[in-house]
Image (tube, rainbow over all chains, first blue to last red; front, side, top):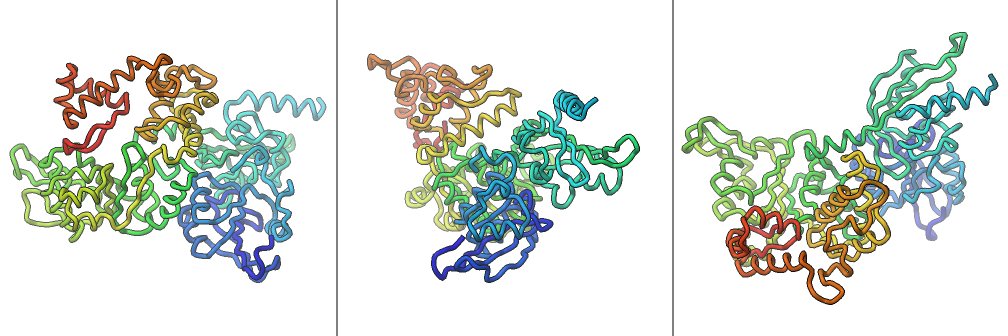
Amino acid sequence: MIGPEGAIIKVAFATWNNRIAPQFDAAGHVCLVETKMGAIIHAHLEAFRTKLPVKKVCRLVELGVDTLVCGAISRPVQALVEAQGIRVVALVAGELSEVINAWIKGGLDESHFTMPGSRDTEW
Amino acid sequence: MGQDEHSRQRDVILDSVNEGVFTVGPDFHITAFNRAAERITGISRQEAIGKACCDVFHASICERECALRRTFHTGRPVFNATAQIINNQGQRVPIRISTAILKDDRGSVIGGVESFQDLSQVEQLQKELESRYTFEDIVGRSNAMMQLFKMLPQVADSASTVLIEGASGTGKELFARAIHNLSPRRRRRFVAVNCAALPDTLLESELFGHKAGAFTDARRDKTGRFEWADGGTIFLDEIGDISPAMQVRLLRVLQDHMVEPLGTLQPKAVDIRVVAATNKDLAQLVRAGNFREDLYYRIRVIHMLLPPLKDRREDIPLLIDHLVGKFNRLQGKDIAGVSGDVAARLMTYDFPGNVRELENIIEQAFVLCRGGIIELRHLPPELRALGATGLTPSGSMNLNAMEKHFIAESLRICQGNRKKAAKELGIDVATLYRKIKAHAIEVPEADGRGRRR
């Protein structure tokens, strides 16, 4: 996913066990990836020090995240994240590295990165 | 028996069970998924089979406390663990889980089975009983609501006093509870006080407490609400209705964080967060000299203005969905939603009573609608009429609209004095209150007790 020329895009991938975490509300970590012109310039694992979803949202804001890629996310928490101006790409499943690569190439729409049951839903 | 026949029989048995049931192999990929599991998760069996159970179930315990993993490790079943899943609509569903090991004829482990029960109805009933509403009960995606959501995490995190302004029925207490439940004080009490509901002397005793003998009938010590809320949050509703004397006492609490129960000279320190709310324009009251300016600025450190429902009509479909789900759980019904006509009518209605009025409309429809979807005939008469203006096709006023008009007019003439208005109308005060509520009539504010319906 290439942003405006020269712009650094920060994407947080909710992660667990080297996979996309099944539920953002309960996720313990995000992999923070910074990209520029479609290339990864920095990546690190960030542990949430809280179980409260709202605090996790605050942390994403502090980290300057532009987009959150996650598995399931409850509607209210999604509204809270989006209200902060953070784009949410939800119901993503798969190995973390594969998902990140697909994201960079703009190929996250492929069905094998989609959680079951998400085809009919508009979250 | 062939493998297919065996699978078919197993599915028939599992589908006859009312609890959600799924089985996994040793790799945690789903091998069977019954009909109740489809219903609770919103995911079809076809889609679920062969997938990692965490990607289908996405439960709160998947990461750290997976019940199946524990069963695999210990070899012992888990009974009645609780968790929350998120269904395919993004709704959080509370569940109770039990697990067991699956073994073949030779005793080798071939997988595990998990059964789960939907506790949504129980949780909804508990919420109703304990008024335990949270941020999740605030529904909306409109710009106005998104602006409020944007500030909510930071507001909750701070210790500053909050003033919530908004018309009746816009959800001021819901926001106050959300602020508390999202704050570091969430494990302590949330104490709500309606300042307009009590006369001054009672309110004083209620807020500050008293010592035995402080006044006639004060037979024993009473802990005040401020002290009761120590460490937590106190919600002062209808703050615009408190007397000048009470304003001074409240100002001292906000300045010094000390309360002085009646009948004692020994002040007590309290650690409370104050969230105040009003349906009045507090700034206007300050300008009119009816509310202390210093108290106003003490209260209005953070200001939240809740929009009326007519200013966020785009949220009405979401609210209808939310309320239909809520009453289905509360009343054990299975109503699918509202008809297109009903949705269209509700989208154009002005809702003087805001979300509370919409909730009352849906609740009434649930009483009248036995199943299927809510039709126009299940709505209150004033909403069934074309244009919902109360005018019949001939242009004359129907009986219901006429009654509303008479009551509103009497209240206007009596400057909001309900007792006088009831006398004028020849009905008792209780009946008048009921009709004010039923017709969602805005009572003029001139009687100084606030605008109510």
